[in-house]
Length: 231
Image (cartoon, rainbow, N blue to C red; front, side):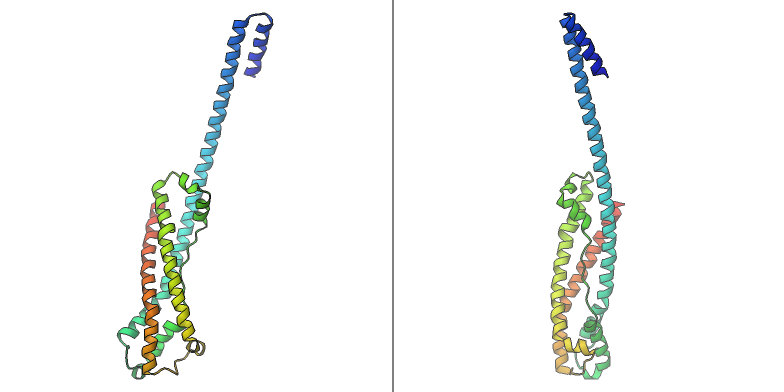
């Protein structure tokens, strides 16, 4: 409306030969246009900032949800792994020799170690991967929290996954080697000599499993600390 008003007056002054007033109103019209553009840009910036703030808030909420799922999964894997570790420690520390004299106890412990399956951890990483793919994560304002999140997903989780793959490979080898015992759920073919060999094979898997369990515990502590910071 104001621009139309200025144009009308400017046209009137042009027709009457009042050029000085014409230029004044022309300048006024230009100033109004510039002000309008600046206001539009400011409104657009406000809208973009609001959208960005909403996106950042949704990201941290999603990360929080993912980390809580990860924490529960880590606890599950640890609970699933503990009986196997405890069983091996008893076999190695208490029943490392003389299978025949301790067959009942040893068979029970070996059943725990060999007949139960194995679980390894993989994180829920949808929110993180999405933010990384669009490079949005580098635009968020909570830089310290972002650094901690990147460290967890880009370093600690990768380390945990890599070690999980190693322990999975060793478990696969162990399971295949003693597939008959697993299929029949028995140790009828075991004697003192074969028992020592079995303990050696168990040990090769156990040392990686025990190391993996320690990394799980370290990662669990880091996840808990990060969740506290995100509250």
